[in-house]
Image 1 (cartoon, one colour):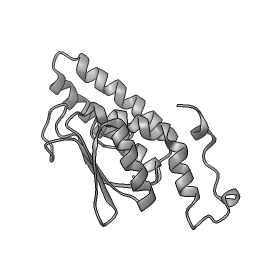
Image 2 (cartoon, helix red, strand yellow):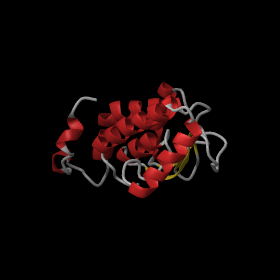
Image 3 (cartoon, helix red, strand yellow):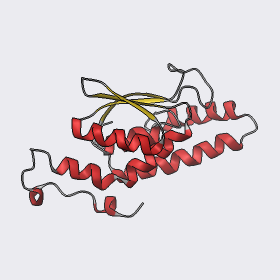
Image 4 (spheres, one colour):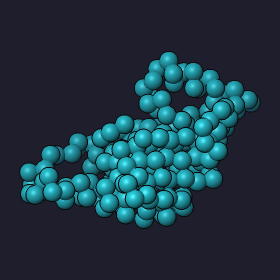
Length: 170
């Protein structure tokens, strides 16, 4: 899940919204969630096999140049899950982690930063993860600027050009 684009983050956010609406409108929400899981398993493209509710956050974090390594919606829509509450964990550079902490506060989710570059976002409300993904996408220029300031690109004019679609307003 490395180096996905902001365009892909916006696409996953929209697809996730569609699937959540489908679950919430169903007479049997847990059954609908399971049916969606089977469809996603067969296609394995729409949400990259990630849990509904955290997929948009995982992809947005990847677009922010973090390296996601685990995520779980904590059973927010039913089914058996490894975690008791929603979480997403990534590796991030120090400057990126500092900006993530700021954006997590804006989205009203918890975030802890470990000493090894690991950052864990968590919440007791799955809806806050979608809000976090939206905040990250709106803040993409800030994250991209951190990447361009990397020592790898001493001259920003020589940095690789981002996808033009990524410059579209949210």
